[in-house]
Image (cartoon, rainbow, N blue to C red; front, side):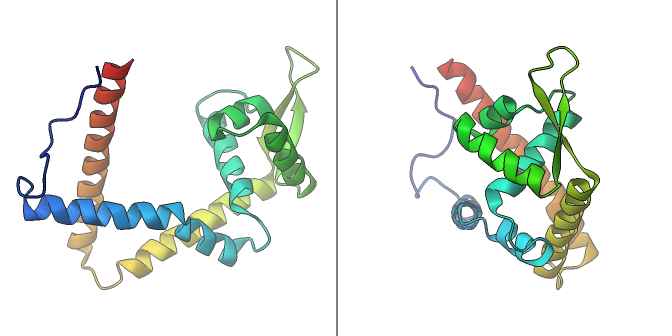
Length: 172
């Protein structure tokens, strides 16, 4: 039996603030689904790159930070891609000198993918563009409002993650 989070079941039971947050979350989901920020960042920092390529660069970085080995299989699994599609995108990124292949020390048949200096620089540039977009979106906010939002949004996302994990555990 699926556990449901303890949330109001209808609009009448929800507070005005809860409804407003929910509506804002829907707008954010739509914008995220359209990949608005990623597209704007690519247009400014790396015209010609596509979102899948950018996603793979981020996945490689995340795997490296977590101490894992970024293989085509690990990338495909993380992105829920068919391994052959993942392999083609990785090959494109290698040809663009954003990724490099390194032989696995334990198994010479496997390649470990690493960000090149150019790949690292690109991700830093994309990050700076994203920060600039956030700065522009909050340009008429006070420093106190930005700090409050940053703390509140992080806390909110922690709460959403807790609810998701509790539901996910109950399903498992």
